[in-house]
Length: 137
Image 1: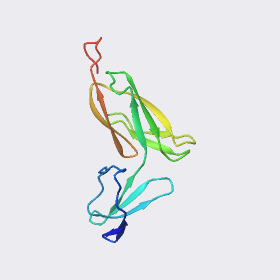
Image 2: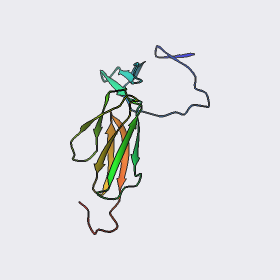
Image 3: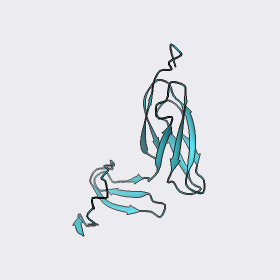
């Protein structure tokens, strides 16, 4: 094990992939809660970044304007909630999760590219014009 700024760091094997998740300025300490959330203490920004292990998929993956998009959430806290911001002018909603930590929420978008967040985790949604209509608002 190596030590980086006072933290024990185990080397990764080839079986793992690396994902960069933004945190605050000068991340210094990391802790994992029993629900799987990861907390990063940021020295220079004097705050803590929460990283949720949620998995979010959308269906359909290439929606058309006004077609409902279903957000499928898994990996959350059993019987907990997930906060969904659709990335447009719609209000943020709280989605109840079941005993497996899963839940769903459906939303209709206008044409464009949106970055929805579920518990802070970004999910890109690209909505194309509806082929049968001239305009979609």
